Image 1 (tube, helix red, strand yellow):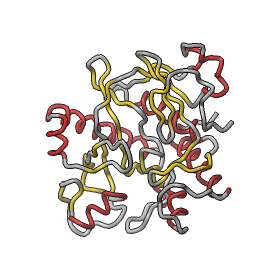
Image 2: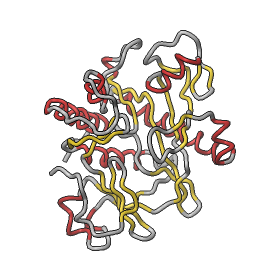
Image 3: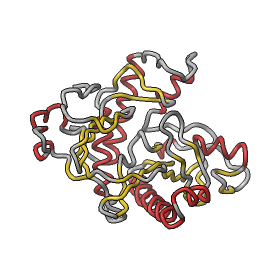
Amino acid sequence: MLINNTDFIKLPVYIKGKVRNVYDLGDKLLIVVTDRISAFDVVFPNLIPNKGKVLNSISEFWFDYTKDIIGNHVITTDVSQYPEGLSQFKEELQGRSMLVKKIKMVEAECIVRGYLEGSGLKDYKATGSICGIKLPEGLKQGDKLPEPIFTPSTKATEGHDQNVSFEVLCKEIGSDLANQLKEKSIALYNKASKYAESKGIILADTKFEFGFADGELVVADEVFTPDSSRFWDMKEYEPGRPQKSFDKQFLREYLESITWDKKPPAPELPDDVIRNTELKYIEAYECLTGKKLD
C-alpha cells in the first residue's frame, strides 16, 4: 500500500512536512510517514514503495537503541493503542506511524560529521574549515575526520537550513543548552557509528532534532534514517570519490544527470529510479536491524 495523502485522518493537522504528516492530539502528536520523497528540498510527484515503513521502523529501532544516552518522544508504534479511534486505520498506519509526546522543539538542527562529504566538503574546499572548525590540509572527499565534529544549522521555514558556528548557536540558544546538544549529538553518533560498523556500514554523518518534554531534553523527529544520515557500504569505501550510499544518493545522482534546475516542479521519475531507490531503503533497514521488512 502506497501512502501519500492521509486525509482519512479527521484530526487537526499540526504540520505537514515534505515526508511526514503530523496530527494534533492535544498533549500528543501522531506522526505518519508517507511514501513521498524529496531531493534538493523539492518533493517529487512519484511515491517510493515501502519508504515510509523503512523510515518509521529504522527510527523506532534507533530510538530504543540509544535511550540509555537520551530519552525520546516515542509513546508507542502499536496502532491498537492509539486514541481517537485511530485503530480503525491499522492497515494504513501500522509500521509507518508513531504516537509521540508533544514537545517544545529546539530551533536548531544538530549535525555530526565523521567523514568529509556534502555541504561540509564544499565548506572545507572553500575555507579549509567546516562551520568554523579548522581541519587538516589535504583531505579528500569521503576521508574520515580526525574525530567527529558538531556542525549545527539554524532551522529554516523554507528552503535550505543555514550552517552556523558553535559560537553563533551559543548566542542564539544559550551556552548551556548548546553544550548539551553538542555532547548528546556526538554521543549518539559514536554509539550508532560503532554499531553500524559491526554491520559493515559506515555512518558518515547525521542530523538530529531535540526538544523538551516535561523539562527534560529529548531527541525527536527521526534518528539515523537514510533521510537524515549518510550510510556507506564499508566494502566499497574508497576516499577521493562519491561513495555507494544506502540512501537517496541514487536519486540525487540521477537528478544531477538530467537537465533540471532543482526548482519546483520536480520531474517525473523513471521506474528504474523508483525501484532502485526503494531497494536501497530496504537494504539499509535490513542491514542495520538484522530483520526483514514486514
